[in-house]
Length: 323
Image 1 (spheres, helix red, strand yellow):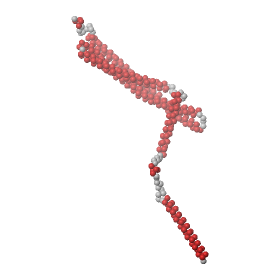
Image 2 (image 1 turned 120 degrees about the vertical axis):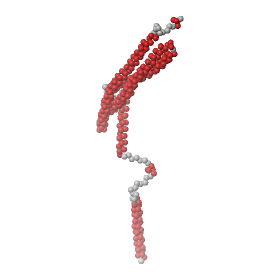
Image 3 (image 1 turned 90 degrees about the vertical axis):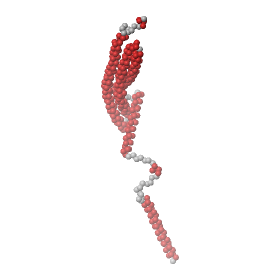
Image 4 (image 1 turned 180 degrees about the horizontal axis):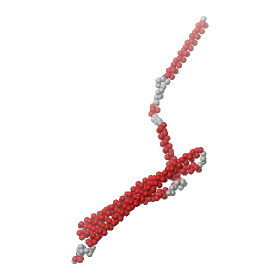
């Protein structure tokens, strides 16, 4: 009886333990489900909260179009840098006498003559300005002297005629001198316009021509160096690209040379027309000035010859003759 009772108690304890284990498993699964549900609940599509440090940082997103624009700018800067380096190296090699340069036997002498003409005409303009200023000062001095003689003519009855004649002559010469100075000033202004505008505009084309010539020689020398190097796949690609660059630079150089040649011909025609007209006007002004002054002096001498003649009856006897 005791054995049966013990066996029944053991079975009851085993059954209770199994029930407790099953209940524990169900509770654990339930907790795990709640945890998963809380992690993938209604806010599963929302972004995680941002920390203050991440919120304060400035991040710039560049669209695709801006990336292309920046890439193009970088490519342009890179090309400009390479071209500038090659042109600087070419210029230094030419000055040191170690590099070769392209010379146009027809155009180069014309450019040298143009530079010399610009210096000569600039010097001519300075001389003409100096002459015009001196003539103005000379005319002012003549007029002042004429005014002084006219005043003495009024206050000196015995020398009224002599002072008056010289005062009239100086006033006339002063007036004609101002006209001559104006003519010289006009000549100087026209020559200055020729130098500072027409020739200077052509010099801009000359600078462009020299710039294109240096670029062409730089790429040409680079191609010659590549031709002297070893031949492989990489060098062949660089060689083909260098040949294309040389052809492009050659076309630019030839176009610049043709434009400059046309500009030089137009400049020469314009220069001849302007100088012919201005030199004729200057010559006419000088001739008119000298002829008018000579004629006025001659008329004054003929008019006052009798009054200035000591043998004339108009002249009174001296104090010794009357005593």
